[in-house]
Length: 121
Image (cartoon, rainbow, N blue to C red):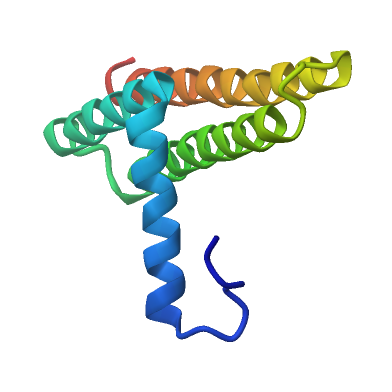
């Protein structure tokens, strides 16, 4: 168990955060899929050059989806560790966290479609 992050240097806290990203990458296929989709979206931005506003909106949506996936992963890991018997409330919490990722993913698709419509419609 590592010490609490409070009061530690910023660089150490950043290392803890990156450890979380590495854990999510290693443990969660859905996080890896979201990262690959994010790379595809960033590649599309580089090719399409939609302008700074659309680029900023897409980057924010990418960050929101990845953050939601990380929160979902953290919640699942904590609940599985605390309640391995999977009580009903644990399943509800995990399903709701997964739904949050789904909603943000859907919103990202809508944003990307709106960007394409604006550029080519």
